[in-house]
Amino acid sequence: MHFAKVAILSVSWLALGCNLFSKSNRDSPGANPPVMYGGAGPYIGGPGGIGGGNSGADASFARADAPIADSGDAAGVNMHADGGPDAALTGGFDGGKQPADASVHNGAQLWTSFGHYAFASCTWFSPTAGFCTEAPTLLPAATPVVNVNVLKTADGGKTWSVVTAIPTEATTTDASINVYFLSASDMWFTTGFVGAGQFGSVGHSIDGGQTWTSLTSTVNAALGAAPGDAGVSSVPIWQLASAGGMTWLLPQGGTLLASQNGGTIWTKVVPQADFGAASHRSLIATQGNLLLRFLKADNSMGLYRWSGSGFAPVEGVFPASSAGDQSQTWWRTSPNVEGVLFVDRGPLPAWASPFWVYATTDGGMTFQQLLGGTSTASNSVVGLSDGLAFASFGSVTSYLAGIFADTSTSRYLEIHRTNDAGKTWSTVHSQPYQRDLAYISLSVDKTGAVHAMHYTTDSLGASISYDAHYVLP
Image 1 (tube, helix red, strand yellow):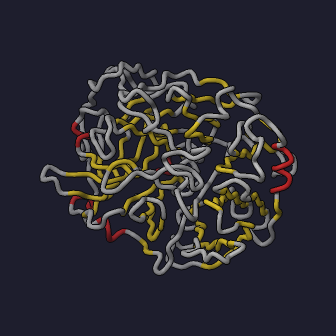
Image 2 (cartoon, helix red, strand yellow):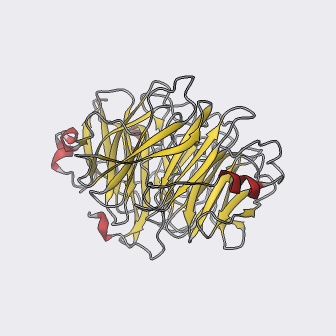
């Protein structure tokens, strides 16, 4: 399958985030943000430097366990949760035709190495054109300001040139710096912080990073003294998203901000009453919808869709959790397709299998199970690191990347694909898993090409380093 066949709607936007010092922002579409679940190391938590234990706003990481659907549900039909691990899908991984590289596990030969570069995040606009951010490897205690280098490539990562050094206004006490590329010219950054009295910042460039405008005071003034924002001495922004011609900010407090003019004027949007105190919060921006997701006080998942005037609950039945809460599912989307994929390993503890995978391709109106916990396909999963889902060919197409085991229990770093909503799967990339804490992340560019990014983490799953790339056939 060539991904360019996927229909791309006229509404085009990107909401791309990258954490340069701590955790990766997994809901920043298109930036190749990794999401970790299962496998050889601990799962990665939180947005903009906030870990899985959630400190403030966990703007990109939700979790749940064992959602179950009626086995007879077809693509696009509401999933009905019954709370028991009984559902199974026919078929399994390797059920389709395997490419040559997968059959002999030589997929490692396909990567284009970044050489000496180790990037914190990358954003692709075509099969060959992309931007990556280079994070400082060490922040001396005396460093008052952190500048983040942005590099670009026109040949898929073979060569790189420096575009700009972003003056983030960040101090050494900042927990994260997130950079967002809405286009080759429209760039944003936000910073979050840890500890009372520290400063965050927001900046915007419309000339490809040559000049930057600080929006910190403008955003701070817009937040004012809204409930949930009292006591915030600056601007801890955990996430930025772009959808429907509007730019959105997700601060620490109980208020969202939206701008229709590039950040000159911001409007406050107050979501549901329990949003301010909620954890695991994120804005999930797809090609045609903006979803707001957060974990409620009873550990159930709140999922709401922006209507143009407010956030209303989605119509679909969100799959239940066998663990009694919905805090252990990771979500993933790409801004160039209409699809959100979420994974539940169920049950606890971490790294346990089998895995369930669900997707919505209509903004939460329906949920489709792609991978059943008791199926052969699910049992071969050791750990999933990333995935994509979208509607194509009259069904649901999905890619899953991670660590998989064969019948001899040998482990491989692989990418699997289904074109029929999980009935059958094929292996599109495979290489022996020889290095702990090495994984694959996926994204879709505006041309419809699917990008695979190789990355590694440190022993805590905190520091992310992208080191190689190629476009899937």
